[in-house]
Length: 196
Image (cartoon, rainbow, N blue to C red; front, side, top):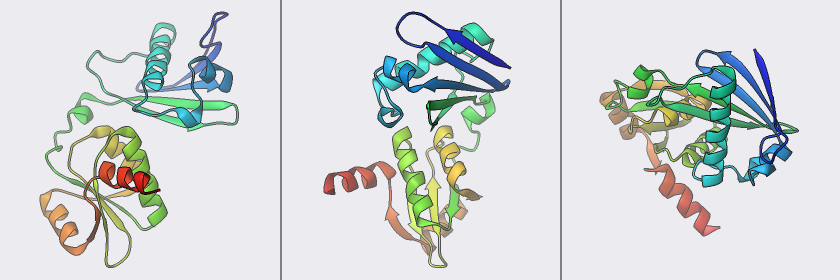
């Protein structure tokens, strides 16, 4: 179901929504609408106050106009993709079970064969404020070990890598076999940025 919101005042002019499921909503913004928030796709960041305010505003409008509902304590995963005209924002409501992550004490292990994919995933994780350790594997490929229980971080890793295992024993085996590239995404990318 599509919804189109029009406003004549500053801010969002033509905001389009599509409800993809009970737990997923897509909002489409054009470049002019983003600039009304003082943003462009390139300047958006999970840690940026203007970005967070824009996302809150868009989600509030969606709730008011479309019936899409987020519980007061419910976690929302947000993914923003560029388009020729602006961007698409996907809001996914995480189930209480996923948000709680019954298994969050256990490390999750993610694998990718490709170095570029590994570092792209690390960058996305950093933007989100997530943490994971990255190891190269002697037989080839890269392993992320995510042990914070962060749902959004695990969703990012699962977009770029495949889940290769769970649990302390699997994580210990991966650490033993692998060569540590970095223990924490944030430390690695901050030091990389300061050396350039």
